[in-house]
Amino acid sequence: MKDILTWIDEYHQGSRFGLSGKILLKQNSKYQEIIIIENDYYGKALMLDGCWMTSSRDEKYYHECLVHPALSSIDKKSHILIIGGGDGGTARECLKYSRIEKIDLVEIDEEVIKVSKTFLQEVGGKAWSDKRLTIYIDDGVKWVEEAKDSVYDAIFIDCSDPSEFSNVLFKDSFYKECKRILTKNGILATQSESPESFKNIHIHILKSLKKIFKSSETMYSFVPLYPSGIWSWTFASKGQLNLSTTNIKEVMKIEKGCDIWNLNFQKGAFKMMPNKIIKELNSKNVK
Ligand code: SPD
Image (cartoon, rainbow, N blue to C red; front, side, top):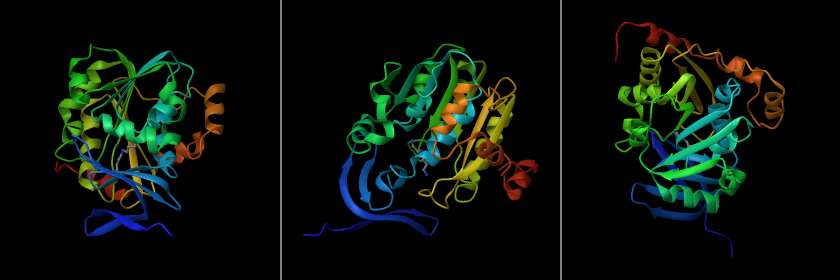
């Protein structure tokens, strides 16, 4: 007998972004609804509280862009913090660098990790068994507030879209605490939403980081599964950002192992800011 195919949609501003397939899991954790669907083209996809998070086919569009611009510019033994990232994709990309000594992954929802390990094994891959990775089931905001000054060389904010539950991860107070716990030239890397389908929050993130850090830069690319496709990642530092300048042998090797990111792709991606976003960033009317 044929499997029954169901449509699962993310509803967004009068549109829906859907996948059809077989639902492998639908459950509520303490924090959110978790769905896994298996689609012929995207593979297995994870949805949290009605929003697509990742899929085994297109996750590299997202994780490679979040991690490599930052880590290909850090040329020293490093201690990394990942906030969220319970599917393991960000940790997997970080662990490609031999100079990463220790990663603290702080995920509030243990179920996301369990479900990802069960259904999305290829996303976390070998990261889950790498001794450099330690998982803490905890609140990322509290973790950052309680961390000592200047302890992390890079912080990756791998969070969901803003919601009642995740709003705190987009606040100035949180970014200021991240700045405090970064080393002198440490880098904050965050997914910064879509300039199209989440324009207001996108502008808010860029303005906040520009105001709080000495330097910040935004790159644009696409994540096919997310509303409108176009997505962004922003990098900030209390020192001068010099992204992907450690053009050493290891970076070249990592580039070869990537599906999406490479140094040339990145060069273009940092020049892709749509004009309407430039205008809004330059306008005096703060929203
Ligand atoms: N619209 C979805 C934004 C989600 C960004 N985080 C995805 C988590 C993948 N590790």
